[in-house]
Length: 227
Image (cartoon, rainbow, N blue to C red; front, top):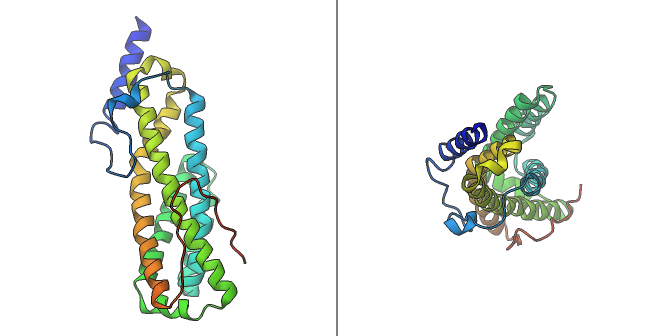
């Protein structure tokens, strides 16, 4: 009886989170009932998704740093770097992760401003060959991180539906399910910003007669960034 009650609680928690307000509309996002069929969700299944998210985030942070160096003035770059460095020194894990996410959002916002500014266009025009290569590779990786985010959201959505279909099976690792809910709730917005800014960077590059190659699949390998 106790297990039945617990499974009901888990099911209710899932139903009142990501499914209550509907999943974001993003490409390849699995929301049909067929995704909940098959074998029960395991902790290992979730770990695979979370590792993918971690890899995408590392790629995003690295590319944002390089693009910021190319597009932002020294004061703006120093400010966002200091914000990120301060966040990374926080000892409490949850607080640190939250502050790092805030710092990342600020960095992306500053990057967006730069792509729309006259100063950003002027900075691009002054890059040397080595800097241009680094800029192009960072742009590729930035966009690749967005595709990886979308793929992770699709996988997390399908996994959540499995959890909802069989809540008894996830009771022992419900905290990992919470991590999946966070993926579905936050990454689509981030991926959307990446797509928008990526397009602006490409337009900015074209205005300076710079050719930029973008990834077409989340399975592609990141490019090496010099410097």
